[in-house]
Amino acid sequence: MSGSPSFDSLPSGSLPPGSPQSGSSGPLPSGPPQSASSGPLPSGPLPSGPLPSGPLPSGPLSRRALLRGAAVFSAAAAVPFVADTFAATPAFAAVNQPDIANCAAWGARPPSPSAITVLQNRPNKIIVHHTAFPNSTDYSQAHAFANSRDIQNLHMDNRGWGDSGQHFTNSRGGWLTEGRHGSLYGLLHGQTMVQGAHCVGQNNQAIGIENEGTYLEVQPPQALWNSLVLFCAFTCQQYGIPPTEIYGHKDFNNTECPGLLHDRLPELRSAVAARLG
Ligand SMILES: [Zn+2]
Image 1 (tube, rainbow, N blue to C red):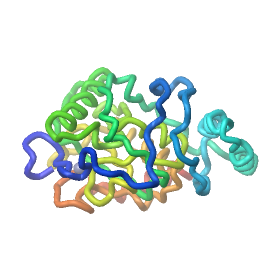
Image 2 (tube, rainbow, N blue to C red):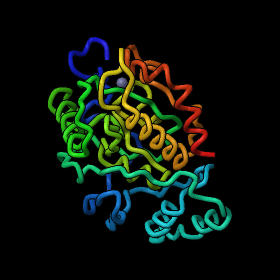
Image 3 (tube, rainbow, N blue to C red):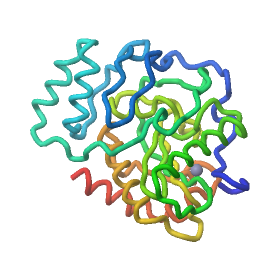
C-alpha cells in the first residue's frame, strides 16, 4: 500500500472499465440477488455459457456444499457428477463453510455491469491483503459491514472501478463478507471465479482477500487471524488450491501490503494445511 494515503494501493488500470472481455467469460446470473449465506442459494438461472466441465476439487467438499451444489446443478443434469463424488467421499466436511455475508447482507451498491466478469476457470492461489485502513477497535459485524461499504465506495468513487476490487473481506472482529459481486457464488460452487481487481497480473487466477487494518508495525487481532485461517482453508478446499499457494500482495506487486501478515504466511499455510487435515 505504499504511496497511498489511506488504502492498500490497489493498482489502477487493473480492471479497465468497458474493456472487452475474454470469450470464456459470461455475465452474472440475472436472477434475484444472492441471499444471506445462511439461506438457500439463488433460484435464478445459472450464469450464461457452458457449465464448467473441469474436475471437482481434489480436496473433500463439505456435505453442505455438496448438497447445495447438487440442488443447483440438478437443473443442468450434473447430479450424477456430484453424487459420485459424494458417495466416494465418506469422510467429507473437513472444513465447514464459514459464515460469509453476501453483498446484499451488507448493503452493497449494485456493480456496474461491465465490472462483473465470470471466468470459467478455478483460481490457483489466494492473495492476502491489508486494507491500510485504521485499526478499528469496533469488532462488531455492523462495523464489518460498514467497512465493506467503505471499501466499495472507495473503489467505485475514487478508483473508478465498477465494484469492490477484492473477492472477500475479513474484519478485525473476524467477520467475513463477500467483496466483488458473484465471488461467493463462485466459491460455493468451486468451479468458476469472478475476475478481481486486487493484484496486477493475478486478477484472473487469484482469490483476493482484504484484511481490515494496517499491519506494518502491529499484528492483527486473533479474531482476524482465526477467520483468515478458516477462510483460506475453506477456499483451498472448494477450489482444490494447495495451502502452499497462499501469497501476499507484495509477492507480485511493488507494495508493502500486507505488512507483517506477509511474514506470517508460512504460519498461515501450515495452519490451513492442518485444517484441511
Ligand atoms: Zn494489497
